[in-house]
Length: 447
Ligand SMILES: *Cc1c(COP(=O)(O)O)cnc(C)c1O
Image 1: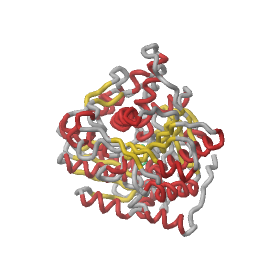
Image 2 (image 1 turned 90 degrees about the horizontal axis):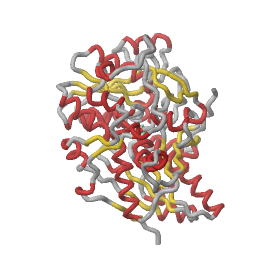
Image 3 (image 1 turned 120 degrees about the vertical axis):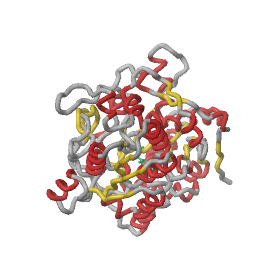
Image 4 (image 1 turned 30 degrees about the vertical axis):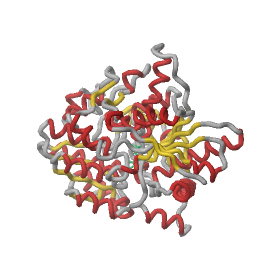
């Protein structure tokens, strides 16, 4: 008889601070640059677009621990801690000696990890007297999370959703509107950036890049409106470390420590969120501050059609397709890269966050490319064994986990594998339908 074993923290055991890995990195991330002057951007520069507190966190390379505001902690308690689960049935189905654990972020009110950062971002905006927030969204997870958090803290919210994803996931815009947000398909005719893109290519399916350009334009042309981002940036990964900090305590409850940590990778926030608190021990060991670190194999699972970690170049590039953002030092496929229309909308982004990019460059982690059909095959096995339908993004982490677990079967190694279930797929059933009907294809990256 196979069963799941769940580990949960009490309210008193919830982490009260986020972990800022920048403080412990030997090679700090290079600074973002102003594209016009090529000078490093300052907190004040970033504050034109983002909440001031988020801008400060973005460039903070000194404070390792940052207090979670009480109001945010109270909101976290609506759904945290999230369960850490031992996946016995999946292990059994694979016949692997590996122990597989997953951190289940799909239990949040919106079904993914994204509200972990949406809540503090909206909280800081409210504190700073901002009245409106805007953003882009791909599959709609971030837009939904921001809509929820904006409502929680009494802000107006406008979302630009990638057009192709809006058609693929119609219910996400319903969720955003349910929480009171307005939603536009991007590219749209409501911004100059959008108009330019449509003029050049009337059938442009949209991308996270086009939607970012539109949202930033709205934020910079509307008084008291701030832009928010649900991935890629350092402060987003910072907020997501709540995942790994909880997981560390929960793994201790299980009496184990991971050999391998896996998460799917769009811009790096759920990966960083799970990985950084564990990576901290390695960094401290290197800095001579600790002796009990253990080397972990950190794997970021990305779609083989959008492989910035394994096939991208490390260079300064724009975060958006129109070139509105600062230049970021990152692994990138180029800001004009047009990703294939895979169903994992949250992974269709051309670049990787700057912290993760530096860590990859320095050999602390690796990327793994997963073809679309393999990801859904993994998702089906997970659903049928662990009784949760995973988000198409999360399916990539599951596929990578299965690859590693099957390797253990060959070698007989009893590795402990921990992966992040970043979200559930209950609003992504058209994607599952296509897969089950045999209509899904794999897209190879052509450089
Ligand atoms: C947005 C999203 C991702 C990708 O974003 P990261 O910043 O790389 O974590 C992954 N999974 C789900 C469910 C998402 O909504």
